[in-house]
Image 1 (tube, helix red, strand yellow):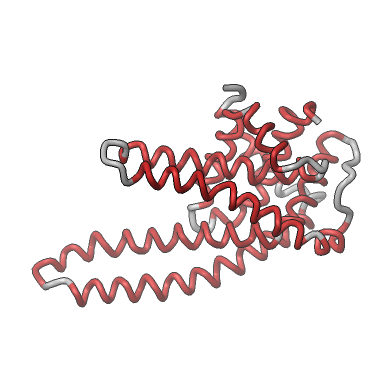
Image 2 (tube, rainbow, N blue to C red):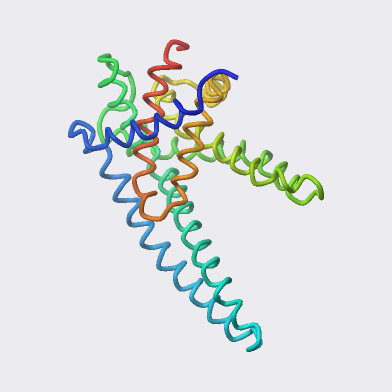
Length: 245
């Protein structure tokens, strides 16, 4: 397989470092504000649900099993935090995808010094929202059969041990595709082109996507995941894939 996992993961951190660039700040703020708002909203809902589950568990368990609440409660809070992070990230990805394309455009122009014939301005990004949502739905449809396959493996005795690795690999692959789509879509390249390009640098794609998938589940830290991943994917596009255009 072509590419390098370490280099791929490094693109995320390089993207994270570029977020402080004042030339990109305006294109980072909107997705960041949207993610923070959704994280607070979903976090409040998750808090109520998990708190109710913990109380129900404490009331249901017999007194001699009360010690189990010390094990169950932290697991429930952890699951609630991870779910909040993933759901807020996914929702922001769908609703603000054109703004991510705009960020990718500005990063590519800054790195290459060449103009990108893509979206121009916030107004164009708003108009492109329906198209962006349609593309996100296509990615979900691509993901579903793969997820079903891994789910089947999860319930087959003897193969269950491989399930966590497969789930993480699938998440890494999808995140790689997700964020590489932004710079490539600016060049009017299809989702099929994105899959082919990522496959040609599979290890780099998995490295980038794996790091994004890991950080996306960390509360608070995940607030900057989306813009950092967009910038990181654009750097990978410029350095490893742009010549394919």
